Image 1 (cartoon, rainbow, N blue to C red):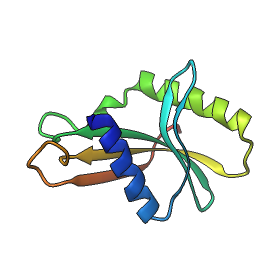
Image 2: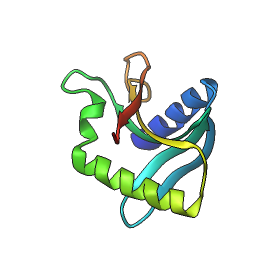
Image 3: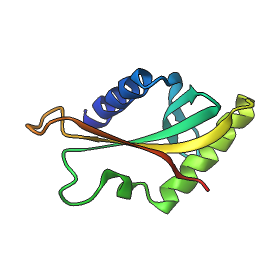
Image 4: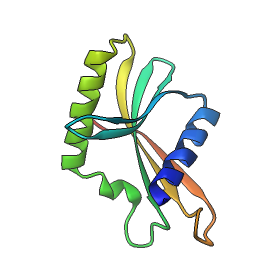
Length: 116
């Protein structure tokens, strides 16, 4: 499954970059957050988008304003259940190529991608 592979790839990338995974695939009635991680002063809510390429559109373009609102609502619920002094941040990790393609793996990490 492309989505699960992309999430695993993104998580490994983030951990190599010094992030500590707190939770994956946190689901509520509002939506789902793919990865919740900590690094420095931030608790980071990560949306992972996996595509074969960006030939037609960047993966981040699939994180619509409606999707952003669902992620923010889900993050607010997680924060109520897990109080923290860390500053929340919303990132998008684009994963291109890889599994099932001949394209080289490419990862693009967009910090503070939305949420004001």
